[in-house]
Length: 189
Ligand SMILES: [Zn+2]
Image 1 (tube, protein in one colour):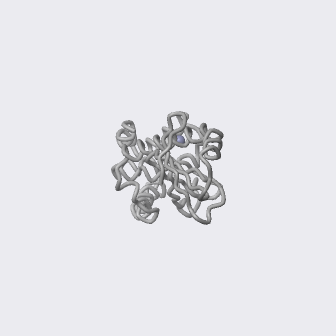
Image 2 (cartoon, helix red, strand yellow; image 1 turned 135 degrees about the horizontal axis):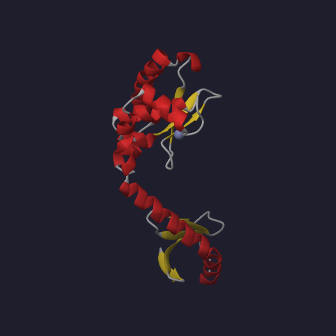
Image 3 (cartoon, protein in one colour; image 1 turned 90 degrees about the vertical axis):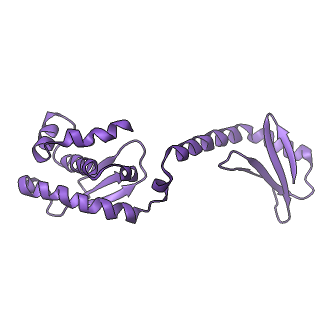
């Protein structure tokens, strides 16, 4: 193995048998190494590295963001499986469905919308009334049950009101009078 540097980027050269061309690897740590055929000249390596320098910098920047996000997130959350999330979300959805059944059953499908767990960063949930499911971000796993229920109801209410107009909030308040209180923990994220 050899160390090299080009335009401020340090990298390691790992010549390998059975490798036909130069491959550049950018690890999550930001470390760069290349695998290359044995006997390749430094000039050939330089040329490829120079061609790819912008790509390498972008990959390093992207990995830096991923590292920061991973560090900010509770590690347990990253290890969760969809099944574990559903194990918690489904009974909560049943509770919410009970609220609806008592007051607004006639306006909803006969079957409770099913839940899909997604790796969504920008929002907590979304709904698809046409296919009768709602999507919940696995990030909700760090929220209290009451908050998750409020999000589930929020998505269910979009079956009736696509927007967040006054009518939407009226329905929320009718079914779950304390929904605003329940949503408070979401504000810290
Ligand atoms: Zn909404």
